[in-house]
Image (cartoon, rainbow, N blue to C red):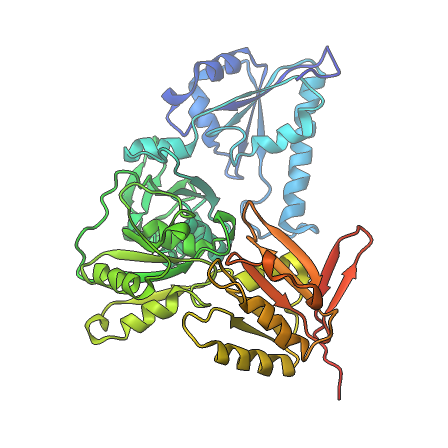
Amino acid sequence: MSGEQSTAGRLYGVGLGPGDPSLMTVRAVEVIAEADVIAYHSARHGRSIARSIAAKHIRADHIEERLVYPVTTETTDHPGGYKGAIEEFYAEASARLAAHLDAGRTVAVLAEGDPLFYGSYMHMHKRLADRYDTEVIPGVTSVSAAAARLGTPLAEGEEVLTILPGTLPEEELAARLASTDAAVVMKLGRTFTKVRSALEASGRLGDARYVERATMDGERLAELADVDVESVPYFSVAVLPSQVDTERPQARERGEVVVVGTGPAGPLWLTPETRGALAAADDLVGYTTYLDRVPRRPGQIRHGSDNRVESERAEFALDLARRGRRVAVVSGGDPGVFAMATAVLEAASQKEYADVPVRVLPGVTAANAAAARAGAPLGHDYAAISLSDRLKPWEVIAERLHAAASADLVLALYNPGSRSRTWQVGKARELLLEHRAPDTPVVVARDVGGTGERVRIVRLADLDPAEVDMRTILLVGSSQTRAVRRGDGEEIVWTPRRYPEA
């Protein structure tokens, strides 16, 4: 960038690569040669890894600025704590470099790896780059070096690579590791035990590799599960490499069925746990419409079918698992709410499947998704009822509608109508009007989260069966539910949590 002071020196952030001096770029060597001042960070012991990498390019006539961290752990007596101590250090270090730049000297700040990738240089950059001409020289990161030393691709095709600091909370690490294809966890050292636990919790420990001091003296490569926690330095990373071309086990002693919910629409509604289960599966089984929501992965086999063969689908999945396959049964919404979990568990209760492990992972159900779009209509007690009479007589549905309505419960009405079921919504409206006022708010939510999303709020008396299909859910308010138009013109619906005393 162009600085305001033409007589000032130039600032360089120089990436040195992962440790082997031969991996420095030609431009990095050129800049060091041109610089008047060589700056580098170090701990209190005075040794600087950055300086050691560039040592043979540093001349006797170079001015050296050693930027010594006041603390290396979060233990400090600084009145502002660790953060205060570090902020003060960066401010003082920047001022020292600014004095050289103001004097017209060129300053090269050395940085291991890449200057703007988890490095200390970036703190100088943020404080100085808007005042002085600045150039950043990219460097080979430890991530690239680790992959090269392992000799394995990091990410291929449409895989997602996630870079994580080991300092994140363990549950956050586990969630992110479960939901990504490939990952690198930085900053191990003191965090190693937590990172290992997160890998285990996410089901990824068996795939994880360990790289210590990549390209430097003392380099070590290992299976992460075999690494002794006492031997892990800061300059080490955990790697979950690309899964493309990784052979999926074809014959385990025992497989597994995991029933997952994809939510009401696409990937934004998947939980990290569900993403992980889908990624780990050998086979995906489900209604074709729901399978289409799941990203395709090399090596996985998809078994799509019609929406009306739930029992057959469940038994097919259990048979695959009995043969050692890891199977994900894909359901819409939450698999336990009018969906596939019941069919799978019913089949799994048969004697021949008693030894097949089955897990159910929750998903966002249509009622919750629609309620969130409309406001908070499910803020108090509510009942969920399916209007489909394919699996139960209409007389049972009518009885339950009467009971729930007379109890003044908010109602979430699933499966309200289809091309072959056109009268149920009108009949349900008639039954509900026996217990509810005509102006009771009704949320009519279609394709929530999808491209055809439409959420409307109508009066119960004005509910039109013609606008309701299988992709629609209805939320019928109680006597306490309120529809309010706010200042921005948006209408919201909410049910108060406090119910009036009799």
